[in-house]
Length: 136
Image 1 (cartoon, rainbow, N blue to C red):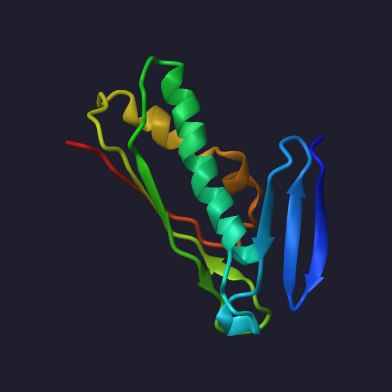
Image 2: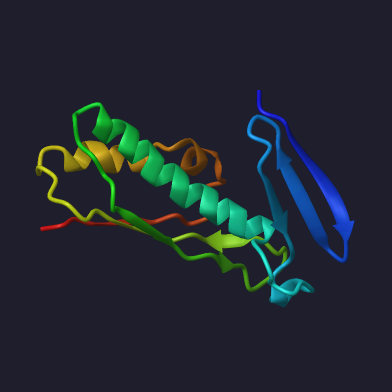
């Protein structure tokens, strides 16, 4: 179990406190939803969670085979629905691997990506296509 405690600071701003590390982060709504966009919004954090979970899960799988993914990048786009209810409609993800990876390892790493816990948790109503760009 991990505890996260959240304080509502007023003016649509929240401060979240991560119990194990003591780290804090601030959220505000995006400009298109009454916020000032000065920090991550709650839905931005979901998109961030997806991208970081994908590359972390891939790195764990790679590490088990002696492969290092340092330098890899992940790009996530958050597309909100255009009709009510307001929700994340699509989260396309592009993973770019910057060093050569053996062809036989790529399917394992791609499977790890789509098997990450965040990808498995988000509703299937949200599109989450993953594109892989390999170094060669």
